[in-house]
Image 1 (cartoon, rainbow over the protein chains, first blue to last red):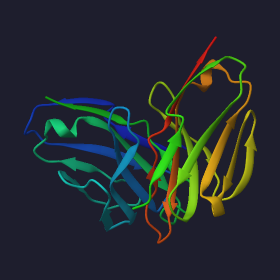
Image 2 (cartoon, each protein chain N blue to C red):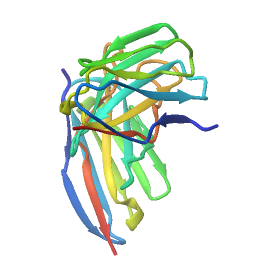
Image 3 (cartoon, each protein chain N blue to C red):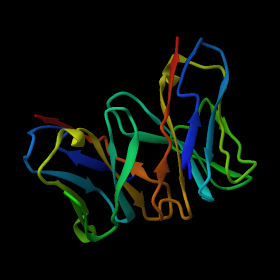
Image 4 (cartoon, chains in turn cyan, red):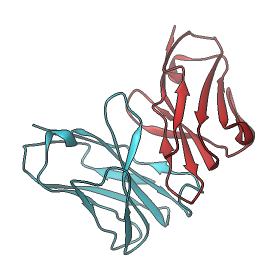
Amino acid sequence: NAGVTQTPKFRILKIGQSMTLQCAQDMNHNYMYWYRQDPGMGLKLIYYSVGAGITDKGEVPNGYNVSRSTTEDFPLRLELAAPSQTSVYFCASSYDGVGSYEQYFGPGTRLTVT
Amino acid sequence: GIQVEQSPPDLILQEGANSTLRCNFSDSVNNLQWFHQNPWGQLINLFYIPSGTKQNGRLSATTVATERYSLLYISSSQTTDSGVYFCAVEPRGNTPLVFGKGTRLSVIA
């Protein structure tokens, strides 16, 4: 199993541009999550999904959108990028239950908005 | 919402030393996990430990849910243990994990 994969690894965006961060998992996990990690801080939840077609907001959803059309994929869309969105983005998945099972993380995407 | 506090924020150890990292949380939780973020940024699961004690090699963890804390023990530390250790809890009410700010560990040879 590849586990949780994320692309791209690095990206530089100009203010106002848009992009999609890709996340995929091959563990047949129902739950998937997007987090952001700012320098020296812990992780904050942006959005999560409990299954295909179902998404919900986390702590910091503003400026982001998600979709979950398949069990495997959970892309994160940034519209009109702002410097405040400079961060490292992690995707994660778990088999079932919001937090009730271990979460497994992807390698992260380092995004800089200038 | 629930508060998760980790201590110490920073720790420097000589290789071979032992250490204890602490995670306090302000309310009852369903679950608790410890993660290690290595210097390359990768997050690795260490323990899934809502209560009790678990051991994995030189690492062990204890959660006392009734007293709202968890401890991560690292024995005979190695330079590869360097990185940031995060505690994350799932509050009651089936909500997603809440992360602490982490303990940054540096092990020097």
